[in-house]
Amino acid sequence: MKLFIIGNGFDIGHGLPTGYWDFRTFLDLVYPEFLRSFEEHYDIYPGMSAEAKKKTLWSRFESNLANIDEDTIIDIGTSIELNLESGDVGIEDTLYSHFTDEYQYIEKLAGYLKQWVRSIKIRDCLPRTSIIDKSNRDLFLTFNYTAVLENVYGITPGNIVHIHGSLRDYTHDPVLGHSNKERLQKIRNRIAEAEKIFDEKECSICRVVNDYYNRTFKDTRRYTIYLSHYAEKDISDIIVIGHSLDGIDMPYFSIIDSYTGKNRMWTVYCYDMDEAPAKRQSLIDAGIDSNRIVTVNADDFYDLKDDEAAKRRAFEIKFGF
Image (cartoon, rainbow, N blue to C red; front, side, top):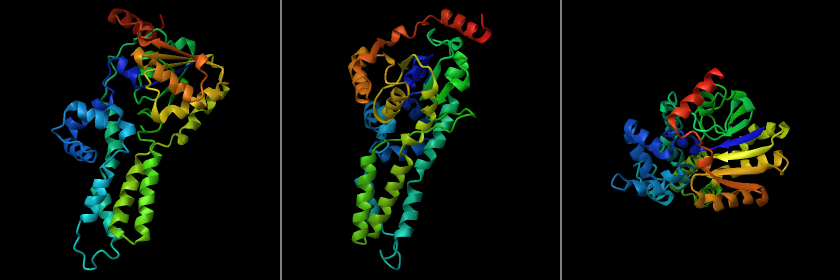
């Protein structure tokens, strides 16, 4: 059996609006005030071009979650006057409560993400590849929140791992976040320095920023348990489609290679073959031997480009003939 590793490009390849810019479009339509407040903390303002907004935050949304304008937030926070009778003495808890209320928008983000995923309609989505065949009983590790594999290809849920969750009852809720441990350590150091000089204002706002970083931190170690059963499977080779192969998810690839004996072939489908060298290098950096990596144009994967062929395949998947 094969193991397919599925990234967001797979859903996009099926014509679904599942990019993080699509998430922003959803927020702009449904929660515009939230979006403005959220983007301001990344120095994004309404007058900026779409390309600038994408570059600053949305093109690599999860990785960029940690890139809030930390210094400005702290400077503004320490300049706030609450006009308490005691002055700035003993106000750390009061300020912490104040700033927590001010920056609680992050807690809403996960809820809005679920609403957005729920709004993505896959009812009319057609299969676009014959390489995925439910009769082969292959395994699937997907980073996507949608149920394209289940609903469009008829894959048995037991053969699918939604590593970062989905809306399905048998998975945990969608998870998103950054992996910037350096930012976490930096703000913790700043808290320690503020505590040394009893600067309660800076200490309180830094604690809120620290909470933000923690809430948006995706600790991949929490989810590696879902990969353990691959060690017991007779996986012949591994196919990657629609995944950028960079950043926070790469530890999963190292673990999968280890669980499968460090001797399986990896086939990586690329939408742009100019990206093939970088994808290959990412896997090499993850500990996978270069002679076990093959890069292929994604056009070879999506072999059902014609709607009529795709509809026939959908009929076969649904009725078995």
